[in-house]
Amino acid sequence: MDISISLPGLDLKNPIMPASGCFGFGKEFAQFYDLSDLGAIILKAATGEKRYGNEAPRVAETSSGMLNAIGLQNPGVEKIVNEEIPFLKAYDTPLIANVSGSTMEEYEHVAATICKEVDALELNISCPNVKEGGVQFGTDPRLAEEVTSRVKSVSTVPVYVKLSPNVTDIVALAKAAASGGADGLSMINTLTGMKIDPATRKPIISNQTGGLSGPAVKPVAIRMIHQVYQAVNLPIIGMGGIETTDDIIEYMLAGASAVAVGSANFKNPLICKELIEQLPEALERYGFSSIEEVIGGAHHETAASGLFRA
Amino acid sequence: MRREWMEIVEHNAVAKDTYRMVLKGQIAEEVKDPGQFVHIQVSERFFLRRPVSIADVHPDKSEITLLYKVLGDGTEALTEKQTGDKLDVLGPGGQGFPVEEDVREALIVGGGIGVPPLYYLAKQLVEQGIKVTTVLGFRSKEESFLVEEFKDLGAVYVTTDDGSLGEQGLVTDRTGELKGSFDTYFACGPTVMLKAIANQLDDVRGYLSMEERMGCGIGACFACVVHTPEDDEKGYRRVCCDGPVFKAKEVVL
Ligand SMILES: Cc1cc2nc3c(=O)[nH]c(=O)nc-3n(C[C@H](O)[C@H](O)[C@H](O)COP(=O)(O)OP(=O)(O)OC[C@H]3O[C@@H](n4cnc5c(N)ncnc54)[C@H](O)[C@@H]3O)c2cc1C
Ligand SMILES: Cc1cc2nc3c(=O)[nH]c(=O)nc-3n(C[C@H](O)[C@H](O)[C@H](O)COP(=O)(O)O)c2cc1C
Ligand code: FES
Image (cartoon, rainbow over all chains, first blue to last red; front, top):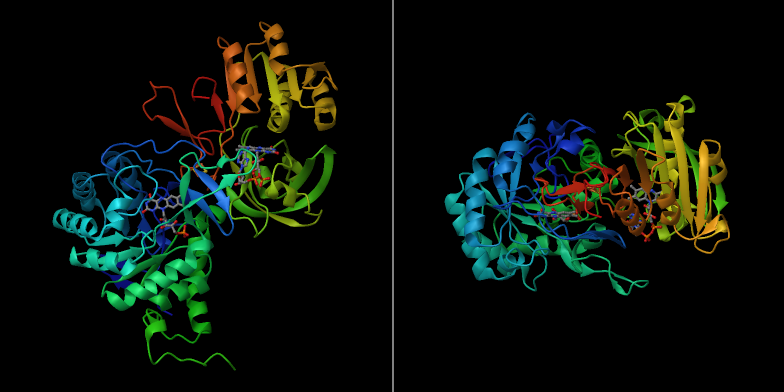
C-alpha cells in the first residue's frame, strides 16, 4: 500500500518522523539505518544563541514514560545551520526545524535564519522546561496568535505550530494558531510533571519539574487531537507515546495526518524504521485501503463499525 | 554500536547485592576500549534503559562480563533473569580509558560499583607491560568483589568504611601515600571520590569515569550532560558518548 502523504511544504514518503529533541540532528541514528527511509526529520530545538540548558539530572523514569528537563540545550541557530544541517541534507528526507525562543524577536530571528535551509518549521511555543518564554506563548491564545503571525511573516516555508497540552482549552490555542496563519499543527508537547525520590525527599529532576512523555501521555494527546480536528481545518502531526503501528493508526483515526515518534527512540533506536516497514501491513489488517481513509476516521459517519467483530 | 538480543550465559551473585552476568553476542566483538558500557532494557516494565559498564571481554567467545549492584527497581528486576534468557542490549557505547598512551606505571582507583570497568582496564594495561597498582574502596567486606582477580595483576590495597577488609578508611588515605609511584591514574566511583582523587592527584595525568542519568545513551537527547571548565568553547560533554571516561580536567566534577 502507498503510505505517502502530502502536507504543506512536505512530501512524505510515509507519515512517520522522529520528534524534536529525541533524535538530535540525526547523526547518532544514522549509524543504525538510512535516514532517507524516514517520512521527515524534526530537528532538535534551535534558539537564537547557544544554550547550556538545565543542570543534571535532566531525566527521570516514570510509569509508562519519562520526565525530561533538558532546557533547550543547543549550539544556537547559526551553528545548527552551518554545522548540523549540511549532514542531514545528504539524505532524501524533508527537514522540519524546531524554532524556539524566549521573546518574539528571538522566534523571528531563528525562523528567518533557519527557514532557508529546511522544508517547514515547527514553532515550539510549548517547551515547559525554560524559565522565560516558551510555554507562556503556548498557553495564552493572544500571544500564540501573535508569535505565529510574526513567524509566518518572516518564514519562506510552511509553519506548523506545536501546541502545549498544559492548558484547559486546547481548541482555543489551536484556533489562535490558525488565526495567526499556521499551515499546520503539531501536538502534543510534553505534560508538566514531577517525581520525588523518597530517599532524598527531593524532586529527582534538578529543574524540579519536567515534561512527561511516553505511552502515559497518549490518551491525552488522542483526546486533544480528536477535539482539535473537529474545530480547526489544519493538518495535524500527532505525537505522544507512539511505540506501535496500532498507536499510529489510533493517532490518525483521531485526526493526525502524520505522526512523530519521540522518547521511544531511546528504547529502540530503530523504532522509526521498524514502524515504517510494518505500517502497510497493519493498515491492511484493519481493512484500510488507503492511508487517507485512516485520517480522521474516528469522526466519519461511514466508518466501518463492526467490521472486525467477526 | 548495535541493538542486540544477547544471551545470558552466566548469572550469579558475587557479593552482597552484587551480581555477575556474562552475555554472549556480537557486541562483545565490537568493544573498543575498557570503560565502555552497554545500555540494557531490563524488561517492558521499564521505560528507560540502564547503563552498565563492561567489566571484562572475551572476544574469542563473543562474551562480555558485567557486574552490577542492586540499587533500585531496574537492577532488582535484572536479578530475576535466568541463564539462557535473552536480554535487549544496546552497545558498546561511549569512549573508554585510553590504553595506547605512554603509560609505564599506572594507579587504578575504584570505589564500590565503579570497580567493574577498571578490571578490564587493568588486564589491558598489564598485557601491554604496564605496572599496575590498584586501590579499591568498599563499604564492607561483604560488599567487596574482584579483589582476588586484581591481585593477579599487581599490588592491591583495599579500604573499607568499617575496616572489615583491608584498612579502615577512604581510598584517598592510601592513594596519597602512593603518590610518586605512578605516572597516570585511572579512577571510577562515586563523584565525591572522583573529586577527592582529582584534587589530591592534581599534578598527575588522570582519567575519570563519570556517571549521569541517561536517556538515549547514544548522544542524541542531551540528558547526560556535564559542565566543562570555563575556557572550553563547547561548554559541555555528554557522558554517554563523549565519555563516560574523561581527562581529569576536561569536565567539572
Ligand atoms: C556509564 C555508566 C556505567 C555504569 N556502570 C555500572 C556498573 O558497571 N555496575 C553497576 O552496578 N552500576 C553501574 N552504573 C550505575 C547504574 O546505571 C545504576 O545503578 C542503575 O541505572 C540503577 O537502576 P535502578 O533501576 O536499579 O535504580 P533506580 O534508581 O530505580 O533507577 C531509576 C532511573 O535512574 C537511573 N539511575 C539511577 N542511578 C543511576 C546512576 N548511578 N547512574 C546512572 N543512572 C542512574 C536509572 O538508569 C533509571 O533510569 C553505571 C552508570 C553509568 C552512567
Ligand atoms: C528528551 C526530550 C527532549 C525534547 N526536546 C524537545 C524540543 O527541543 N522541542 C520540542 O518541541 N519538543 C521536544 N520534546 C518533546 C517531543 O518532541 C514530543 O513532543 C514529546 O516527547 C511527546 O512524544 P513522545 O511521547 O513520543 O516522546 C522533547 C522530548 C524529550 C523526551
Ligand atoms: S543519554 Fe542521551 S545524550 Fe547522553
